[in-house]
Image (cartoon, rainbow, N blue to C red; front, side, top):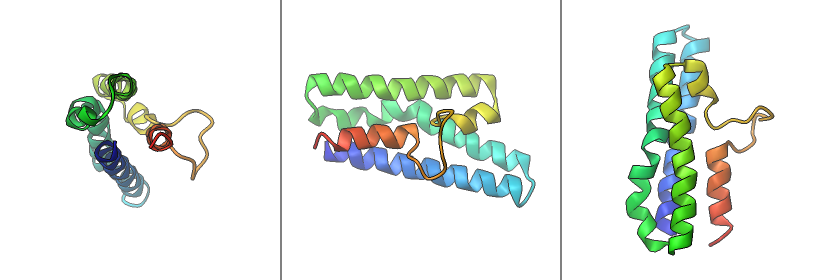
Length: 119
């Protein structure tokens, strides 16, 4: 599971960096086009998670493989919907529940933590 966790942590960190850059270019540079580009990249990463994680699932037992695959598909489905709608607001809110507070884990980070607790 270590390879999977390493991969997912990398993706989560990349997503945080994209969000931070998106916020920076929107608020400091007032550049909505670059904001949208950053959020598109975030949504594409999430949409590709199940496929890109597939090689890392081989080390898991079949029950855990299914659980992880199902979880990643949920992230991907929401990202696909945001991409189809072409909604920067929806793309930005991917991974964040309504009651999210700054500094909390987003849903992907929470998913990773739940997997880490099984190692």
